[in-house]
Length: 188
Image (cartoon, rainbow, N blue to C red; front, side, top):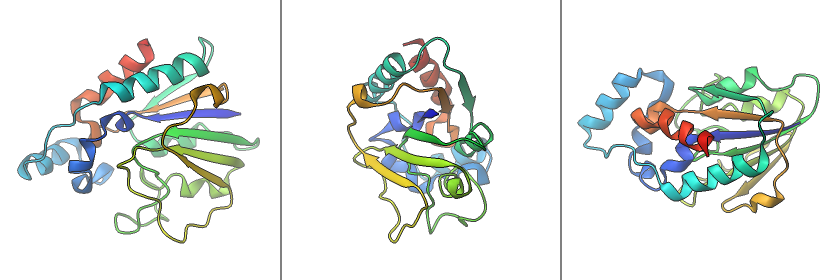
């Protein structure tokens, strides 16, 4: 099974890098997050139209009208939809690698920033992270029991046809426009 995972925050680069270090994620409410960013004078999340076009192309070329689409707020919710008994791979378009961030959280407590680490107990074969040039690098000394590949500019035609599309809105990073941009991608 091939899973296409899209965190719409991928399309908020490069402005996301300005405020990314101040996002608390699901530890706080969305209203509290907005207040934090506002008090620090951070810019509002701004989508990059070129990144949206990349996502539209991937969805258009590599899924079809029968491909199941799952939409969630937080990326760790993907674990509820992955196969438990059969192997799978994930191609994840995301500003964040989501393996874990040593200074941000406890990697053993599941959240939106460490769900990839928690795949260690699943039948995953390969995880491909399609990142932005300004994304934070993977942690040093990373050891996983599956293949992890990073890509900045993948050849979309070389990607597999996907059996499932998982969409993550990540409102703490995308503000009020994440859901709208996700729908924009799905409308093609």
